[in-house]
Image 1 (cartoon, rainbow, N blue to C red):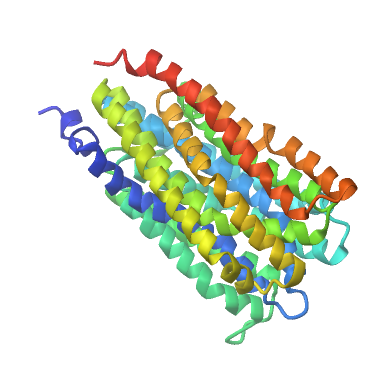
Image 2: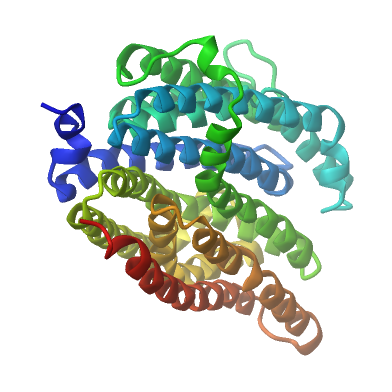
Length: 459
């Protein structure tokens, strides 16, 4: 029997395949959000400087997201190309895809290492003039960049495990890192069990140790259970055709994630003109919402290899089923997230020790921005579908629209109205409803064109 037919990606009913692959990926992505939210929970309770420390992590957050963006984007490209190569029965290309992904991860790590050594202080100082916050944010970010090999390499091996249908192993690796991070946070931040009290630097060390633990687990699993591919230095030799294939799919994913970093940086600069408490409230809200958005990203990462594999196998019905079930399950996740955040808005703000105007702003952010989740979920799912069908440009445009083009100018305009015309500060949060709503209209148009050109022609 043909190996391609034996592969569960080709034979398992798509709705069951979406759940069996998607649930571990969702858990994996939600656990990724744990790193930032756990750090924030502990540093916000540092005696005397809790809110300043929380603000410091918010200023460092865009670069952390950029590391995740480049790592995961490269992994997504390798994931889709690997899945498609296996669907076509081309093992040699699959092997080279894995090897070149590891080579690219090394280049990415060196770049962030250099930034950590020479660029962190200037970057942080561009967002704040508060010397206490600048010092804490610089210390935190420098550690995260210098030791970023964990998150970069894990992003690659995680996606390669997912591409072969072994997403459970990537989830185990992610859980391992999250548990290590949670255990070490209070020990290193507050100084327990004989360890010195390190504050935000302790949070950074807990984060990078957790990330390295995840990477080591994922590497071991890849070597042990990914039998569909072969490993070796010869496959790591740079191959321009393979690298181009990875980034033709992965570059839109990088931009999609990187735009989050750019958007957050720009919003920090805009919001600080209204007040430092606006930056703190938005930064905390963003980390809370990651649990919901990252769940959608996890399901998107199941949609991409399923649709890509069956597109490579030339199966029109399974491609359409992948789109249908992927979109349905994504919307279910977003509705559940909306309900949870609307109910728990106040408790979430109090967990992090916020009070007064900052707490009120955080609550209003949760309740207003979460209304955009239905649009956001559909946009995220469409991005994964476009990537799987080699329609990277469409995916890229949606990313630019929802994370930059319709966000930064609107936020800037609303901030002007708040400062000069007495608009309520909570009106800043309407920015995200506008951005996601306009973006979904564009996504609908793109989907109709992609369906006609790349799906209806399949057998």
